[in-house]
Image (cartoon, rainbow, N blue to C red):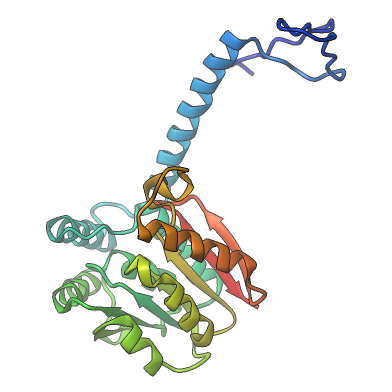
Length: 258
């Protein structure tokens, strides 16, 4: 095995400022300051490389129907100023949907169909995706993308409108998964609706909870980021949910309804 080997001090190390010798337990490796800086760079580089590898890991062949449809939908996202889920986040959605054997899924924020393709890939063959977006044009793009990916027209139900007007009309306890990727200011309201819509054991997933790193930034933040922090706290403290925060894409907050 090659790579960095930390320097192990065999004798007590003395604090250069003041105080008695600092004794390290047997077998504990310590690192000189210069070596530590080099190690930090190596760790950071390895993590970025690993993250990039994970993001591309499950991507379909670019020439396959799914790959071509995803590329087309992502191009429409760029043109329309919509930020789709990353490939790694899409892979995670597909896995979560398959793991819960989803037949009925609600998507809040259709975009141009990128996340919907991943959700449909993970759902059962007879499953139906109900996708909601305030922009009818985006729904049309998603409809074209789903068709290009090979999904039958009856696999998706497209509902134009404001999510908080649409969701109350959906069936209580009738869904296996709810995916939220719309107005971050409304995420807490989506959470309340999701708890009503999900069956026991169903999953709710929120996209973009890292907010490009601003969620954990100690500096002043906009209301959107403050709302994301409230969401993270509410999900973690809820007795009705079992949460996990996944570092896929710009952060996926997932929780199973108990």
